[in-house]
Image (cartoon, rainbow, N blue to C red; front, side, top):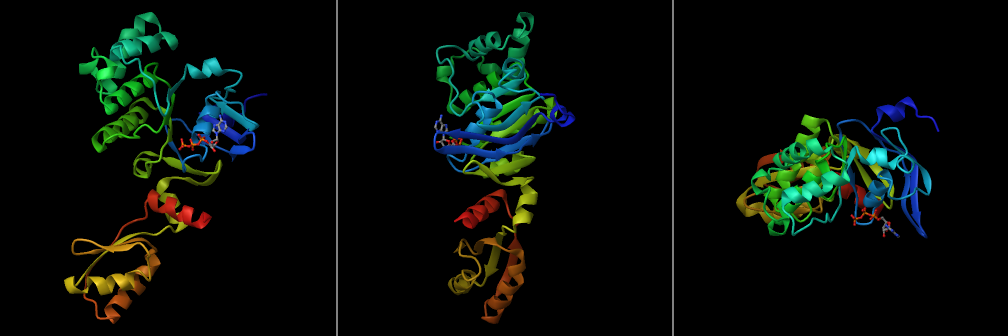
Length: 316
Ligand SMILES: Nc1ncnc2c1ncn2[C@@H]1O[C@H](COP(=O)(O)OP(=O)(O)OP(=O)(O)O)[C@@H](O)[C@H]1O
């Protein structure tokens, strides 16, 4: 089949892509168009179809419906040419624990056919990007989970791929290690123009990193677009902080719960989750009407997390 201009301009295109395992439709009617240099998030519950999608894009699975094009090529027919330009971080990357960080990368340089004369420079560069140069000659088995994850990323970017699949890169990491990985993903896209497909359950990460996301449910895209636009489009509602008279918190909380079921009192203020902006004047009016002293009202914009839960409630 010939390649269309659109295929050539997009890094990844899927057309009515589907995958069925016996009775299970893992992915259904997926139409993706990924542009160069964007970070695209695949979100969804366990079993929503994220990993299956990545495996289809990577040519590890045969679609049962539709087709995939990566760099305008078919991963099933031109897999080798594509894989040279793609890096993959799987959900549970296996490292050679008895080898040093540098030796782990050397092993992969052979697999990726990195030209011999470039190997040491590329290894130095990858280790520098993930901030492991000082630990290059320590055994991977002695690394913390965060360091192992950074080494696995160094391995995935060793051959300077144009497209990077990251499956749960921050799962199980402490906030500092997690932030380190997020910064790294941003650096790769900004400095190298790498296109990233990010599968994650971390909605805060997705909000911060992704140019666009697709929320999958039962293998189908329920919602897709830039995180900020999704929040507005779905009318998901954001959070609201209220400061009321200290002795009136319980009474105010009762009133708040008629507007937002997820309302709670904290240190000196009340927090309401997922309340529509249009409801705020009515709420304040009712509080004042009932004699509550309102000292402060601080609305917060809906986040991707709010969108995700709004979508989940809709589906129930
Ligand atoms: N090789 C397989 N054989 C049979 N069913 C499979 C296979 N791989 C995936 N599935 C099923 O397809 C569905 C989608 O699975 P997938 O691993 O893509 O989900 P996921 O969104 O990546 O989940 P998680 O967040 O838990 O990693 C699940 O119901 C899963 O059980």
